[in-house]
Image 1: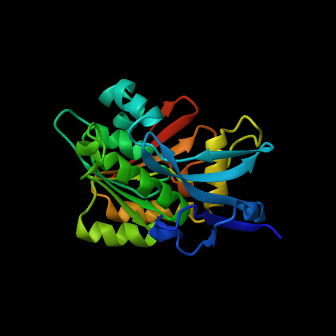
Image 2 (image 1 turned 60 degrees about the vertical axis):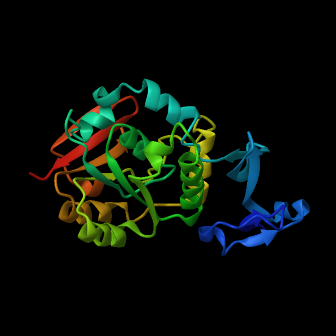
Image 3 (image 1 turned 30 degrees about the vertical axis):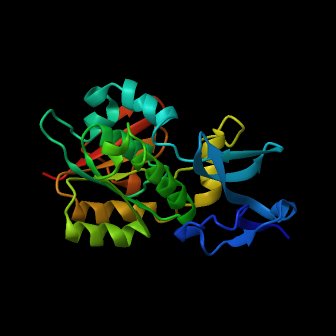
Length: 258
């Protein structure tokens, strides 16, 4: 019988991340076939990266969170600054650096982009698996000379259920903006769906309570709620936004509160 996920511990000195400590620990790679996927550390340029591995399309593929290089770095350097769609949706202006609560953090890329534009981010991720990957990426970014100033403060991660934590965190420090990007099924289930998104879906599962996020967010945000949706998706909670900003394949539904 195939079980869900495991942690592959290749070295006794490796510490299992706090949100993965309920996983079965495997030390023999012959046992990995008993699981749908597994977490393990791999060394990249002298650093330990936490990766998730799973079979897709007849081969083992993997993903990790890298906030220093790759797609995040490219968007930081060439994304268009405050002229890009996410910045317009959040209402970013020259002298306004809002506090943003990203209640569906995922792999942290949209939050990283907003952080690079000057916003202060708090993030919530309900999946312990995805949260662990993001936490690992933050730890490495903080230790990087080029990225440390961005991520050592103003980029804070919490693990738990967003409906509960939105209210708790807002009582401590009311966010100007609450950002939502709930999981939504792809229009076509095919190999064209990116490998990474298929792995994320495997880890996160369904998102049946996404509609509940919007009314809670409306009670807790100070200025606006921004909801990222696929272009073909209905409005969250069937609530018509104040305006929508279209981008390639996606749109940002904006709910103004003042």
